[in-house]
Image (cartoon, each protein chain N blue to C red):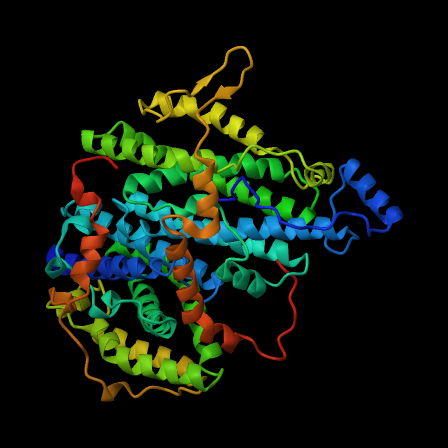
Length: 328
Length: 251
């Protein structure tokens, strides 16, 4: 997982008015030539800020996303699922590690990022504010939330910031296994006993709305968006990602005999676009702003983990400890 | 060869691995640093995977399928030592348990590498290589935190005292000790314990904790005969919650 489609942009962010025009032109020329920007290269403040925001949100989504699925590791039915789910969730935590390292190359320490997560200043993918009631919910996440994340991450891996792209390439390679695992689980549920089929259908009913929210609201044209597209920070619009996801996965879901809870969902043969009922964007806003079913619980768990581990981190911080180059 | 002796040995090893692997996996998302989340998850996967292979050996000796054996038994049918079933507690508690158990585990597999029962000897040689890393991990952290500051030292000391009697329970003798030894299957729990004390004390001596006086602790026994703490049954209930909804279903 779990790099979640939508990146919540800052309310107020300066533009490029104060940047050195010559350096800015060189920077933009490099990106236009397809070169990657590396940590020690010159970059505009807005570029740095937006990337930190993006990578940090992605990293937070990985560790918070480990919670709703992680809770099913101890209940996974049978050795095969237990071992696979452990490995999968471990991968996600590993992705967080990789992404925090990538964000650190832009100058924000991991500790500060975690503080901002816990204080609510920095966000994570909204979808993890929903509960996983049954094993089928965890199957849904492993298959379809990961699928959504891959759509988004593949696009972003073609971006301009070297450490983030390299991290995403590694992440996508691992995600493709998650997708296979998740699909396998859902196939077994959807073609299993009546009880299993019912569980799977109910999970799909619960998760379809949050899944449509996953890529974020329809994009609004803004000056920032234009610059971020030019700088290859934003590689695809929210709607493009959502369309791609629907195109790839709706047929696969239908193939399993599951019903997607949207009577208006269909592909328009003329435009080639998927038509659907707009998800409840008011709910989306409410949940982002902290009023979702699990926001408080997710952060509380994270906070407890941080507090309980504080003595370990303190013991590791020795004054003579040298700075080590981050992984990405 | 009498299968009863061999099965008893395999069951207790497999159950130890499964239950501690399960406990280790509970650290996922909860570790003091991300790297520890990842490390405990790796060890969990190794241990659960190793238990599965041992259950497969048991299956070849006529026992039920690994999934059935692991997910359908009650606490009193489990042969793990009580050490592995205790809740994770704080990180110092989990770390000390990991240190004490994995030293025993590594030495057990080292001894079993020469077992006269070749299928087990083969697995043991393979597992020894895997557990070597668990051991390096445990030793690194014990040395680091065992020499860090007053708080870390106090915590480790407390956990060590609490867990010592349980750790000695790893070596609860089997009713088949003499047979296992005479048939060259295993060196026996007494010999293993002697090697273990030497091995853990060699590391503890490099920390401010110092070597531990094991003869002053009384082993908590019973796990090998199905007598468990109150913590095992709830763990098993959770583990089998989905599986037991329909044990014949393909999940």
